[in-house]
Length: 352
Image 1 (cartoon, rainbow, N blue to C red):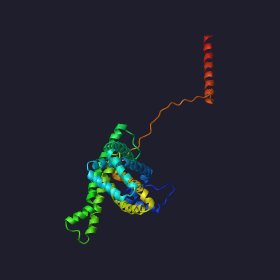
Image 2 (image 1 turned 60 degrees about the vertical axis):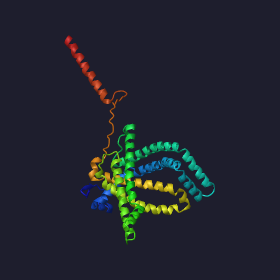
Image 3 (image 1 turned 135 degrees about the vertical axis):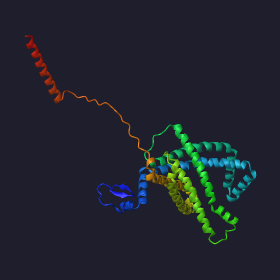
Image 4 (image 1 turned 90 degrees about the vertical axis):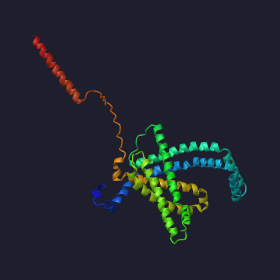
């Protein structure tokens, strides 16, 4: 038995001397917290839920593309000059029959823009609810066992509200991300006539990075606090949200280098975009789930953990059927017979 930040850490059975890793857990509370979160993440099948959420994320892209085509169709239908410019651009970029096929596809999308838009919205709603249900369950199990399922209508309405809330949170995040973009920052420097100052580019990168982390911090804090089916206050999720934002920013920087190396190859040019989306969704989901496990193992949040539901007690009568008399039963029968015989004999003597 050892102490880690005021909390007892039990050593494995048969181990008297702690290992190097266990010593570090005892010495550093933050390291013990990370190891405890990793144990919770693995025990709650974090990788399994991340893979399922990634599937629904990729599946939801197709209806979103349909909505994008329908939106572009309405824009081009109301602006013929823009349509002519787009078709000319396609003709200049793509030679031969492929260019004509693309322009024909654009004409078909414009002609059926209403149908494509309605179908896209319906499929997007279905896929979005499935994605949200999977994501919420993945986040919830990091807090403990899966809760009992509520009614279908109530659950779907709650998932729809969570989906709309996430959409609004992403709008706020994207607005802040736009302020942190390099093009907007360069424009601000030009307005201030400070673009030629020494060190301006480095300061610009630093400010953009900080704003990007702040935007991600707000989004992930909301996700960790409000998407699980656990009533967690926002103030109890800000540390986990910051951890997610920093890890996500590091992943974005490394991912850009990885994608540039993959897309340059012949196979990457064909499969690179879809593989990039899948890898991005999977790693991002894993980061969020691990941060949720980190928040769930925070001592301040212990009271919000889901309590396991006890198993139902089934009472069933036990009936035993035995053939013949046992030894005790035979002895009892003989004794009862002897007593009865003595009683009858005594009664007969009294009558005489």
